[in-house]
Image (tube, rainbow, N blue to C red; front, side, top):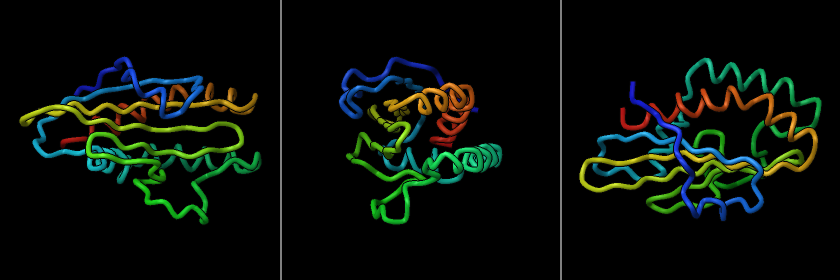
Length: 157
């Protein structure tokens, strides 16, 4: 399995979601000479492991009574990678995410490097709106870390 490391977020990533209360970043180094950010995000998110799909189903069942989104919604016509709408995309960075009443979140996938070596960084940003957002973030953080590491390890394999 490819080793994934916790890293400091890129200095400019805070502009993606101004006022974020939570930011973390993980990085993997892969041998891939023509990998762009959207391809890296697709590798991470297109086919999540069965155990993460199970956790997402549980999450959706638990949050639906609170009126929280279980996806971006049928009216959202933006292109998606996995479940997440694309906010913006360049060759080296793709920003995914959406806003909800309890929190706003973004997943930023950056790809840098030259030759056959690429560093792929997944950064998560969360801006909380209320107590429900704080409770939600607290409940999911242990799972979030496992999921991000697992999905990032799939890039370049």
